[in-house]
Length: 67
Image (tube, rainbow, N blue to C red):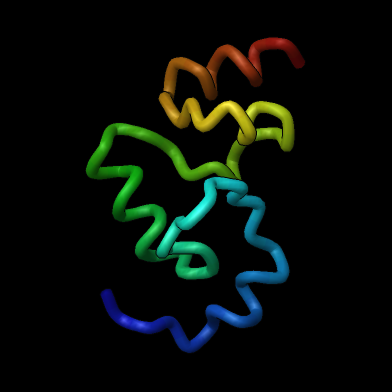
C-alpha cells in the first residue's frame, strides 16, 4: 500500500472507528477497498451507523431513508 501525501490532513476528518484499520486517512485506498467489497466507506454514514461496521449499500439506504 502506498503512503498518502495528504494522510495527516485526512486524519483530521476521518471518522473510521474500526480498530487497526490500515487505511485510516488514506481515502483513495479506503474507497478502493470498500468498493471491491461492494460496500461504502464509513465516512458516508452517521456516527452511530458507522460504529456498527455495516458498510453495506442496503444499510446506507436504510440509514438515510429515515430523513
